[in-house]
Amino acid sequence: MYRFRSARSVVLTIVLLAAATLPARGDEAGVSVDTILFGQAAVLEGPSSMLGRRMRQGIVAAFTEINAKGGVHGRKLQLVSRDDGYDPDRSAAQTLSLIDDDKVFALIGAVGTPTAMATIPITSVRNVPFIGPFTGAEFLRDLELPNVVNIRASYGAEAEAWIKHLTEDRRFTRIGIFYQDDSFGRDGLLGVKRALARRGLELAAEGTFERNTRAVAQAWRMIKRADPEAIVMVGTYGPCAEFIKLARRSGADPTFVNISFVGANALAAELGPEGEGVIVSQVVPFPWDRSLKLVADYQAAQKAFDPALTPDFVSLEGYLAGRLAAAALEKAGSNPTRANLLRAINDVGRFDISGSTVTVGTRMLDTPPKVFLTVIQKDRTFKAVDRL
Image 1 (cartoon, rainbow, N blue to C red):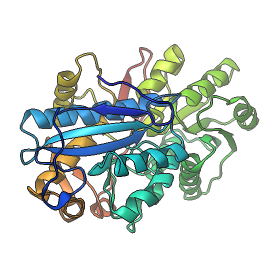
Image 2 (cartoon, rainbow, N blue to C red):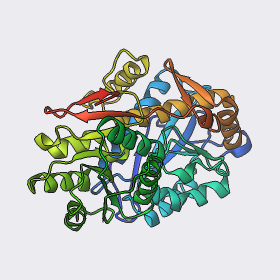
Image 3 (spheres, rainbow, N blue to C red):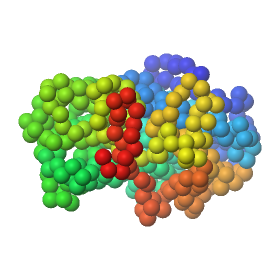
Image 4 (tube, rainbow, N blue to C red):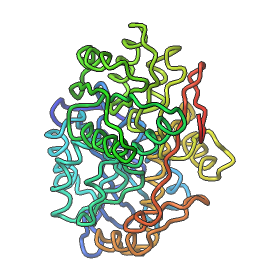
């Protein structure tokens, strides 16, 4: 379905319409007579690659579904994805390549906070839409970034959900944090400290690890001294799984709570039987709940794209991003530009995606996206619960 090329500029192209791109009226980048080209710079290889790949799968499933119905105003949606290795410098380079070389109309499904910090200045100065990034970073919610289209809840909202559960439901007071030592981890750290402070509490312990590594032993040594009742975790599935295994094999049994960015299904797979009881917060609907038309449509679209794929939280988020992009293009009209796409998104604010309302732009301030908790079961499945 895709192939990787050179080491420095790894390109993944999903061709949903094998046609040459011809200039549209106004020569808007990425828009031809019969195609609209989107770009994705995300981690597709390496220790966190499941996140970027799952986002890509969800977006392409949505585009495939839209294209099968005739596209948007007669144009098919196409995606070009480039691997950034979850590295800020590479992400900036790949984003520039997508804009300058591939001539994409908009960016979609980027993965990560440190990478977004490197690429947002590039996209903002050119007013390139930055749709559905897989990150809950607070800085992306800045109203001075009108080209950013957030779908998910913020990390601050996730932290509040964790601390509310741990302190009010569990009555815990000794809470530690394990986090990635960069802008992503520090964003989560700030959210946790604020949520604790609202309850008159402070962190019992902190431990960090370096991005794209599994070097977690030092963090465990730092945290275990406090004998925490719970450890909240801000990282990707590899190092978080390594940390949980190390803690449990050391005889400790705190409650572990992970951020949605971890990649819940990948975390459960990494942990195996040691994952039972691990909590993961989520920011999209339960991807196995076919009573929701959105989920039923997502599952059908994913099966049509690739019958071997199974539902998961990350690809559902990618699917939502793809469907939102298509819905906004419908509103933008038959001669889309980057400016009128963003205008349509910000003017409408609420989109009906298969019977579920997705709120974006300034409307998110009044109706923030939902956060809910799940717990990994013995068989590696997830149970959705309001109170554990």
